[in-house]
Image (cartoon, rainbow, N blue to C red; front, side, top):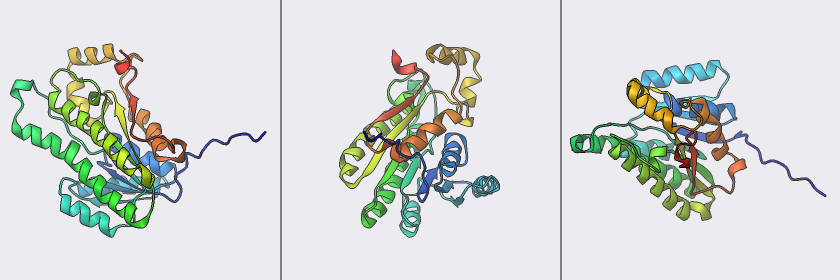
Length: 254
């Protein structure tokens, strides 16, 4: 009998692009992919943040470069990706939230959330996929969604709408791109302690409600997302596409 061998979680020789790669989950993704052997391009709007993260990664012995770019600028993104070597891994991590009661939400709030959470995910992915198709390469696209792409919560109607849309987008992309060996999945975290969630979680009543929903009884940490991202990027997930990896501590189990 020939024993099966576990597929590799290593990413050596792969190029990865991480949007929103200087903070929170995006920073975790940048570090995790580099630790697994990928050459990571850290993309974010603020040049100083990009330089700082790339330098700190280099000091840790991790291979990375950076680009300061507004990923909602579709033309700039398309030009950058067209001129770069193809990225076999893309993590769409850049995102935002503007929480309010539904009746108080404004068109400005809606457009800010949808332009970054949905439109940027669409057009960054499109540019990366075009390069992969042109060069006949497979790849893995990981969209950072949310448990709010499967449920919702108070003061989160627009944010939840954007993440539900990302879930639908991911399934559609997976259907179209599977024949080209391009896999597309989402990671759906619960509340992770980052700058994005700090304000909401500073409200004791809201924090208690969140913890009451998480069956493991604690908030998430960036480190909780790093392993799932490496898994989905690697050959260990070679047959995984069009699905959601819920890292929610059991929130959506009921």
